[in-house]
Image (cartoon, rainbow, N blue to C red):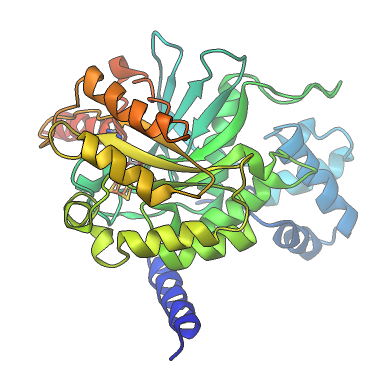
Length: 390
Ligand code: SAH
Ligand code: SF4
């Protein structure tokens, strides 16, 4: 087989395997269906099935995704008898917020529970300078990939999140800020960016992630530009190409090591898709440009990956790419095998990358006081329930 055919076969295998972990159906216990998370075509089909013309789907879409309305009775462009008919058959759902904690630095962390009781984390991270911020969204409950420094990696995968659950995290976070356009048409500001950097590997749940991102990018709804969405992957090479072509969102790659031997240990997926292949996929990534650089995430682990020689090797690896390097202070969790690099080591590393012409911001540790190491909130919630059940 040619390389291309192999990639296609690998993609088909990943998508088929991923579908095995899909969430339960959209039906509520009372038989009503959730309209959130459906594509425009699917929404039109649901409404057509109850005798409604195509323009109705456009109206309902606007109410759900532009106005953020969850109650059919507030859809004022729809006649009252029809509002009632819709409410008998459908819901506009949201995940339940089990906890909402706001840190001293204004970071807000949510633990959301879905209809089958599974939980995932979402974090709103305000921009320290401008009056806006990013919502960090989960794509799976747990993760299959077991990166050594990642707390989510200690939780074996339970399941993929569905498109409704992925979009729902963003919508429910917006609800808590009252950030939906008023009827006068003001545009929300704070929650204006999405980073797919929460629990899970988004490219191992590609179908649901892609469907959700198409919904948030739709111009008649939430209308986020693809420039305001960043997908972070540990390097699922065949799906990186697909995401670039179909979604065109910004790409972030969790590199964390510059030699295969070490990356095999830190990011075990490297044994399947080694550094060379990951870098080649980055070089092919269609939307990369100086205005939309690829982010390389690099978690700084004391004495493991933080030497000056490694900083120089990193620069060689990304040479010629429109790239920036995000240096992440390691966020320790109980039982983790690593310690964070000292700030002076991080600054030396950053200087080498910077001097080579690449921006190398050091990510500020945010929300330390509310267990911000990804995956920790879910574990705490499970522990508390286990204690309560004893
Ligand atoms: N699975 C995807 C996206 C989720 S992880 C990925 O791996 O890219 C998002 C980012 O958080 C990754 O760069 C990951 O390496 C980083 N991360 C995970 N655990 C961390 C920890 N304990 N401290 C600092 N960064 C961590
Ligand atoms: Fe999964 Fe990303 Fe954590 Fe690795 S770093 S275990 S890919 S969530």
